[in-house]
Image (cartoon, rainbow, N blue to C red; front, side, top):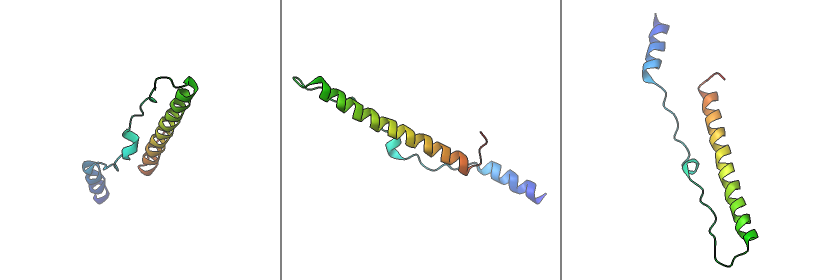
Length: 75
């Protein structure tokens, strides 16, 4: 009976998730286009922006996977 009460209390308490790291909410803007600038320079900055966005997305997935592991979620 005691274990049932503990289980019921834990279920009623819910799960408090840790806060999402702020940088994972950030949106990556396009590289600015300056008049007269070579297209290759613009493309290089766009690729850098994409690399930053992909790294952020990877951190989001790792954060979520860590949460699943900590809370014992099944695949």
